[in-house]
Length: 316
Image (cartoon, rainbow, N blue to C red; front, side, top):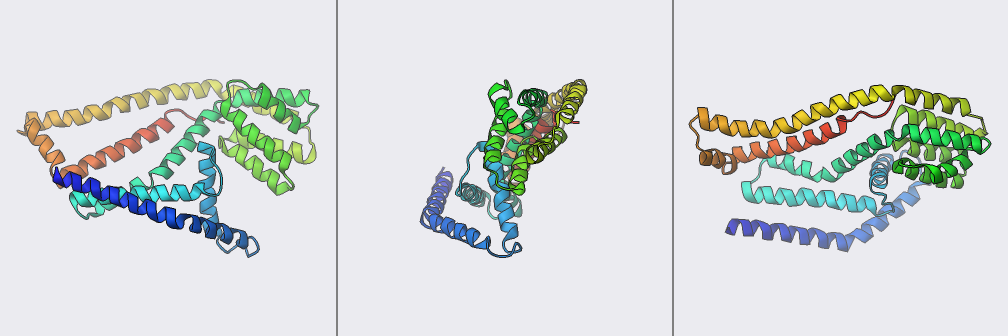
């Protein structure tokens, strides 16, 4: 009991220390980074390119998955990741001592915010891909009604599209950027963000046609009709793959807990263990704890991966 209280106090002090340091130096760090980014615009592209790419990648994921944006979201993300790493490391070191295994587990815990963003992003892409037929059909109809004016068609589609919340949101942001774009590069960037919301081949083709229509006023009706026809053609095969993957995921979901229960039964039935002895070795020895943590971490990762893979993207 005393050891547990000591660990809790230690974790609390670490949390207070890290929070205090962030509150004290965070605003100065944010201001410094912002000034550096502004000044780097007047320097060569080779300067700070990797840092800007990494920051831009994280900010993009946060904006797409949570809707939050602004200059501080990256630093909050960074603070949370470091805090989770240090907190978990302090708990493991306090309970079990210094070990490479627990350092690796703490690093994985520190990466949880990024892992969450990646899986959330993939899940949104997956859900958004199934809005394909509705989106392309509605946009094509409004494009024809609007006398082949793509900007006007997008605005009409935002108001008329039903049961497609992700597509509606993506079109809304695209419409704002189209109205504000001042160059070909800014228009291309807006289209790239739109395509990234689903990351599919049909979205890429749709984005190319939107880009061409807005940039040069080209009539892309035939291309839009072809995209819609191809999407309707693959609907049956996608539904069949989805059912097969879901059945496999359901089997794995129930098999994993059963395997653990069977391991307890096997130890008791064939190796002379008692229930108490099994759980003593599982939770009161260093090797048992490491094995159990490895099982939990790998099981969680497996469930996440299977959840994403159980439903194929609606794509060519």
